[in-house]
Length: 43
Length: 155
Image 1 (spheres, rainbow over the protein chains, first blue to last red):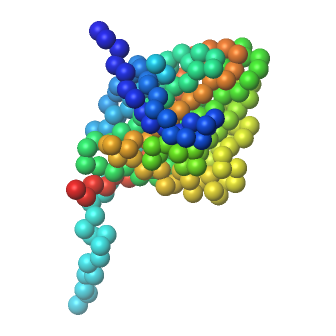
Image 2 (cartoon, helix red, strand yellow):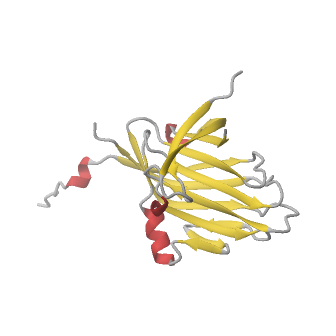
Image 3 (cartoon, rainbow over the protein chains, first blue to last red):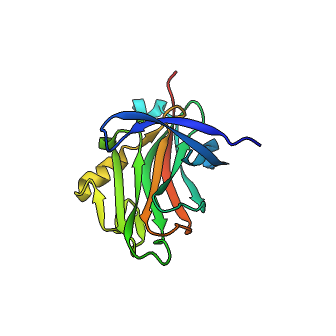
């Protein structure tokens, strides 16, 4: 099964700018209240 | 005869509950783990208390590790951060750093104010990032519990 990749916009501490970074999704899990946590590491 | 005063709070439906999760994925030296915490569509989660705990990377001899918690996609000025040395655990208990080397903001009242306004929606989840800058893999589980108050999002 293909690895799910997501892109997040976040602050880069070195440049001081917002940058887009890709992450591979390792796990998605349901939590209380019908919410979700998504565990990721840099792609 | 008593009169009931109907205020704006009577019109707001809300509930409060714990959102607990953990992660045991291995975080290599120099690498990071990112966890998004996302309420269902149409809901707003406002953080009312927070706990985070991880034991130091076993057998580490140098470096540091840290956790950063962001909302609002993800300005450095809008986060709290707790850093510990290679031989220290990270422990944020009831919103107070108890095991740490440094924390940001470095004033405790400012630190508490910062996490007290953490808010998540479906499109803007809270982001929790763990950075392992020690010399060994982090194999210990990261534990997090958020006490959240839930509101309906106005469409």
